[in-house]
Image (cartoon, rainbow, N blue to C red; front, side, top):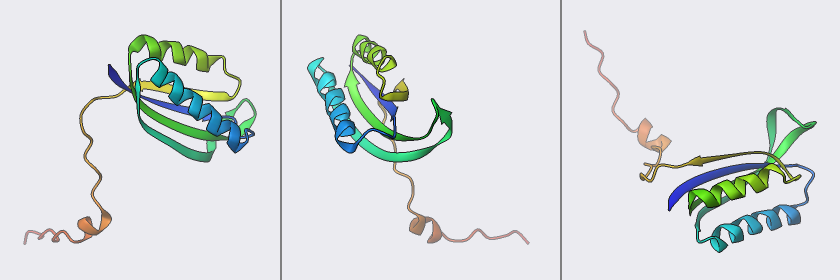
Length: 117
């Protein structure tokens, strides 16, 4: 199995209950097909850079999961015909650990560089 990341932009008119139901169905489908959900983030309503189907806002959902390639293809095909989905993007993720970004306090505490004379 490989690790995939899926970002979905849903219509902003959907009530919170339908959004929660959409995310639950997505997680259940991944698990039912033998996958494993690693991360689920409801990132909230955000303004879009340009209009999509006369919508200026969208509700962003991010999923990171382990699955097989045929399962991901089947799920993305279902997303293409779903009326609640404005856009989505699915990518295969590298399995390396990602180092956390340095904290601003640690950067400020670093010694200043000495200028040459």
